[in-house]
Length: 101
Image 1 (cartoon, rainbow, N blue to C red):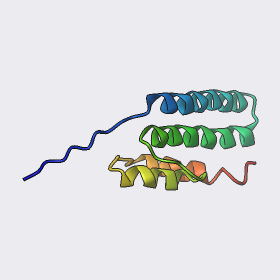
Image 2 (cartoon, rainbow, N blue to C red; image 1 turned 90 degrees about the vertical axis):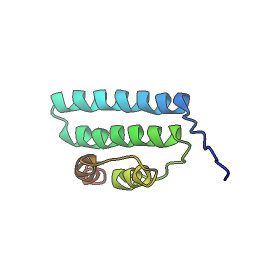
Image 3 (cartoon, helix red, strand yellow; image 1 turned 180 degrees about the horizontal axis):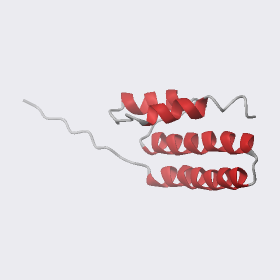
Image 4 (tube, rainbow, N blue to C red; image 1 turned 30 degrees about the vertical axis):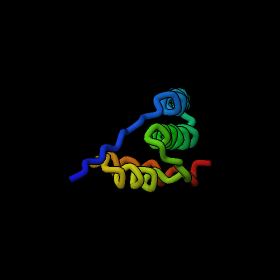
């Protein structure tokens, strides 16, 4: 009987670069919210979530394509990562992506 081991390599540098962008974008969304620029706040909140998800997927060695948070989370789910309640929030943010631009 042969045993095969798969070594999981996480690209921390790619993940951190995307995550920094997500954090900066979320801070900008919060500033817009405080200044009552609601359309920009909604749009940027969706963008921040997208950057965070893409960062995680890049870190895992995947090439994330698209804007839909639901689809990006589906890719995580197929890799065995639990997304549970986050799907509900992703669906809400996805609804604001196009109309708020």
